Image (cartoon, rainbow over all chains, first blue to last red; front, side, top):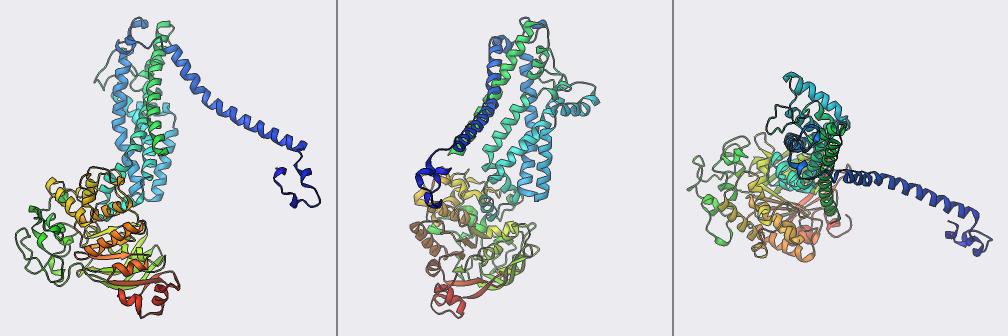
Length: 300
Length: 336
């Protein structure tokens, strides 16, 4: 900016002459505004889909999200029925997946942070990052080949396992990030007390990073609850309520949405919207709770 | 730690040297009557393991059957408890030699200060004593360190057990942030498998009293350890180290992160604790070394950047009339 140059630096010209706005200055400030404007537009475009999606789902689903949808089993053509089978199914498939994935993901993270060498850790982290990027339909087909074909039976447990495969790397990476933030001084303090390494890892490192681990686990659950592709070939879906029958097909909310949204009947489409709203509310709630807490922790 | 829990002798012995304030020792601590003054040996009485011979004190690290024990009590010398003999010690980080050929004898019931310019290996030396050094990847040690005649780097020594005998206090107070004051003090016991409530209660009060913190926190033991001031946190860490019943206390600049008043309290505490413990303190503050220590070791850095011991002597002599020119230059502020 020419205004900023002290006149003494420009020999032979009076200061006042340097301060006058030239055409080049005007052009520069125009370019600046234009660039800022484009960046702002991109930022808006980044946020708009979320707002539009939420509005859209709420508008279409609000009417359908009622007590019947939550409590009634499915009926033919969507006449008077509800999504109880899908809700109960999701309430089984997802927690079982979480129970399988959580210890594996957390312990794997603990291993990379506390015990493994740097190269092993990099390798494990790389594998987890690749896993996160694998299309979920592939994981569905993989689970189908491994947990469905040998038994000649679509089953809910295969669905849980498929979701667990998706959750493990997510849990592992978030846990790892959280454990890396635990100060080394705590580790040393514990070891210097004669506490064995494994106990230090569990009772000091993991315990200190636990809130971050819990947050990661909840985000992974929210992610898995909405996965559809891995369930198509595994849990398959079920018109009937299935509680406890892990060896049998079971419905789930994303499957319910997937099936009903493709039917030619208004009533079923409407139920799909209602279920979509339900799923959206769950995912939003988890995200707001977890990220809200994380935000407060960071700002403190 | 199922292994520890299965060893009935363990609770008694490591607690053995703490019996302040004349409180009646709990049942688990028959050995607590043993004072730490040289010559005062506890008589073999009730509660001792039967194989303990009269007049021979077994090291706490040697207590209990199982892997990692020292080779029976015979190795422990009769005249010492908490005597450290360091011979030809070299410490490495990978191929870099951080400490060169240190010979040093560290007396029990006394404070030995380690002084020297930054980077001369004082902290590294301290961490070789309780084998914290080897936790750094690539870090190795040559030479011998004997605690009461037992080589702490011997193949039959378990470093985890050794660290319960050689407590450590770090530069920055590091209470466990997820734990209450009470839980912080007993962390070393709980995390090694000792959960008996009456024992823990007794240890908490005794350790906090020893660390001169009891009166300030006795009504808020359930509060988080991080709620204390910096100086209180550091005394909490000292209490935590005392709770596992060490013989030796290694302090790495324990007051450098504290204000002058908190520093004074820590120094008073050190003077008291030396009645019962072998204390080695690393300090950057020469006045502090002069105030708290009985003996002072001066280390400096050689041309190969390896730290070596210039001399060790009574503190009064080091600061008034040292034998070495280097020491005189350092303590009088001419370098470092």
